[in-house]
Length: 303
Image (cartoon, rainbow, N blue to C red; front, side):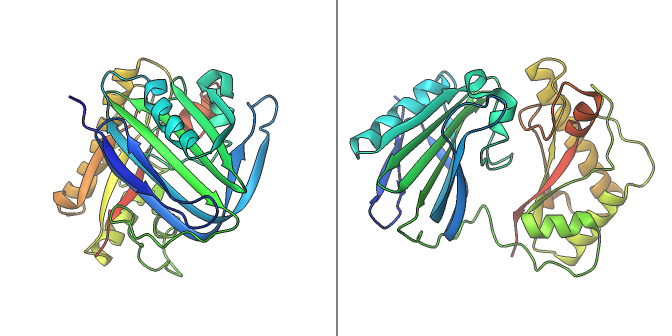
């Protein structure tokens, strides 16, 4: 029997608190709360441009990973939409993958980066709902046997309650000197290791030293309480399973350099692969595919 999980998503103010019950066993992968922030809300599909409204107010965003091996994206979304409708939220806009606008729509909205949130460009749904001046948006997608849900609440008339997330701790102070990799890593919690260049279908790295790996190793030595995940990515050529495997091997190649050449403890670095589900450029040009074949580093914990 499927076990449902009730999770509170509270925001003070006219919109009230909403307890969303996840329709499948779930684990939170990301939590963010800001007393004042801006949120881009799509009000229609991408056709030449993306129609959006930008709302400022108290913002809370949470992402969940669901154990839902047989559920479709719509089966995941529908019970959440029903719960919101029961609390007098009304749908303003909803769409599915290609009807939304595919790549252009996905990268025109606010989405938590992988590995916390995955968006399969061929299998996702978006929903924007409104209650008074408050908005709730949901992005739902899948990766393998798992579902992913991002819920964002913003209310111009309220301040979000402070939330401290164990999965997203405050990074070390931003250094005034050092590599671009380190500055990006400590300011945003993730960075692209841009000098790790891979051919399509390959996870092999050259034997020369890579400046980004050396900079990351120095950062880890300077911050002994920090652990990271290396996340491999591919372009969109080939099938899903093959790209998932290659992307993980790319991350493992970078992890091996950190451990074997730079002496970083294996327990401080994990390797993950997300295939082509988190592109940073279009896949219909050589330069775009080259940019998408990459490894990123993500801070996973600090003391």
